Image (tube, rainbow, N blue to C red; front, side, top):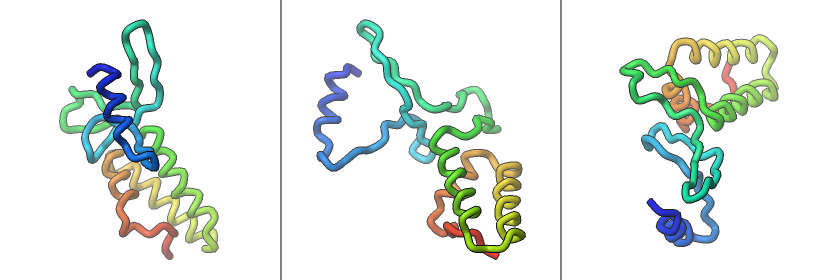
Length: 121
């Protein structure tokens, strides 16, 4: 694709729209984090796309926006009015979830609107 074709698409977006530029699967988008020009080429760098040859086992780790989401969850736990034991239990739950599930499963869980924003007792 030529940059001119991409510009046409970008220019057609409503002025109030500011979507993230991503690639990959809809359920696991990799976000654009850097763009550079070298001569006639535009290089786009995306956050940690998984390797194609990984097979069934996903071990890509978390990408930048996912780390932000996890950090936000920890901040919610810390700022909650719960007692120390309840906060510790919530943090242990997040830690164990990270140990027992793939990174994409964890993000799906954290993005689920039915998951409470605040830690529960």
